[in-house]
Structure formats: C-alpha cells, structure tokens
Amino acid sequence: MTTFRMAAMVSALVMLSSTAVLAEDAQPTAAEVELFVGRMTAHVAEVGTEKAFADFSDQKGPWVKGELYGFCHTLDGVSVAHGGNPALVGKNVLGFKDPDGVLVNVVVVNKAKTDGKGWIDYRWPNSVTKKITLKHVYVEKVADKFVCGSGYYAQ
Image (tube, rainbow, N blue to C red; front, side, top):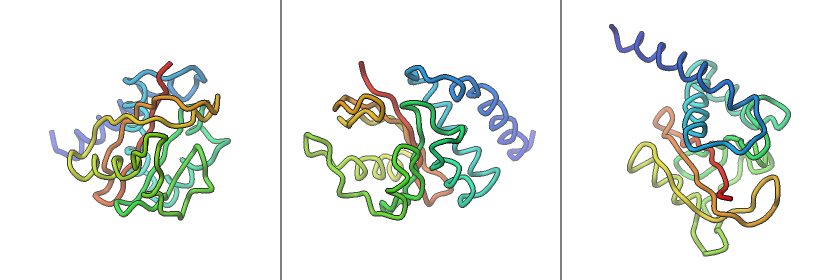
C-alpha cells in the first residue's frame, strides 16, 4: 500500500471516529481530544490552512463544542486559529502566562518543535466556567509550520 493511500485511510478513520466528539457538549476525554486534533490535522491537509484556520475559529461552527475547541499557532507563536477566542488570531501569544508564571504557548510551540506531538499541562481559565483549572492539552505539529491543539480541563 502506498504511503498516500495509507495516509488517506488513516485520515478517513480519524474523521469518522471523531465525529461523536463534535456532536457532544460533555467534557471530552484524552482519547477524544487526540482524535479531535487528528481530525484538525486532516482538515488542514484536505482544505488548506486558510480555510481550516477560519473553520477552527468559527465559534458557531462544528469545531467548537463547549470547552472543546481547537487552536493553531505558527512556530513563531502567532495565533492563526482559535475557537475559544478568535480575537487572538494574528497576535503573538508567546507572552501568555498561566497563574504560576508558565509561558504556556512557549511550552506548546516547544513541544511541537521537539517532539512533533504530545501532551502538556498548565492552569488556565475554563472557557465555560471561567474558573482557573488544570488544563491537559494535546498538540501536533502541522505542515512543518504550525502547531495545532486542543484540550480538556481537570475536574
């Protein structure tokens, strides 16, 4: 099987298996977040960065369900998509700190640069409850130029 066919099959499976995540407003699980980010990556490959990033930032679209939303940054820290706060698009977000002083987007970008993908944790305001909560975030390097991710809040 060619690499292209294998990638197409994996993308199709990810998209099908993560459809349920987008239909629910319940708190996502780690597995659902990983599938969601995989679906984001597949969407970028399918429609291109401009359309995908606009889709991810549309708060009324299928990429935002309660506390589940996606974000993407350039590897230089400029937000190019943000379902939780579209006003951040176009801004450099490397200086954003959590209440403990962690430069969260530096950690996000570095995870993508060093490992390509993976999990990180930091404290952040929950997009639904507005309370500062531990957030588990999964990120993936996309198209060798961006990092996209999503997460869920600890209860």
